[in-house]
Image (cartoon, rainbow, N blue to C red):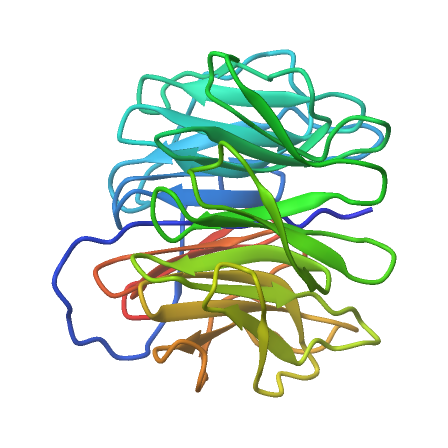
Length: 342
């Protein structure tokens, strides 16, 4: 079973710049022997990546930190008991952040209060395999895949004075999270029998409502300051995904948008961006050529191939920069790729 949680969510505060489509380079060295499952960048220089594997014999996950745009990386001090993969990192500010961990048979949620130098486990005790974490001024929101009777998603305030389950029951796993502002957000749902409803909030995650049904959507991207959200359902080797979905009413209804034909590669369900600039990811299938990322500067109306690695299903990419022109992409061998012109 593979897991594809969401991805990266950034607020960008800077003036626009003119950029051109350009080149990628591998920066490093590689941080380790395992795939990089996620990344979060506060700006183009300061960010985090998380690695690890989930299997019958899981690895000890690791988080690495850079303050110089990926030129060098420092491993954070992490709890020694955890096993699995870091699937999502979200920094509330420059000092406080959270990381979700997907593991077989165990549940972890890490927190840092010293800018990622060290982490402690603050798992609320109701989750299983962590897929994504997001923080508002009102709540910490965590999604997970459940394999028993545990809930698939929960909001709490890190003091456990309130604890809201927004998705429960078997075969109703939750995945990606993003917010357009501090109050309005959407959680997407993963595999189900038929379609599954997304979940939406208007109070920063304290309470949740069911939204419209969606296909299996592994991530969600919100245009900051606007009530516009995108999700990218995932296809497979035999059923290529051909549509991006958009909502302008916080998940009450969705509209399908056509995607460029990227065959022989397949869209993996990973989407991220900055303001109106959006990237979507492809996955190489049947040992065919890499296609990399596609970029839209008009909220999904048109697309351009911009290269980069075609990642495996359980790797991600991160977008930052003044106009979304700095992108970090991670391959399944632990390699880190970067472009500074989109």
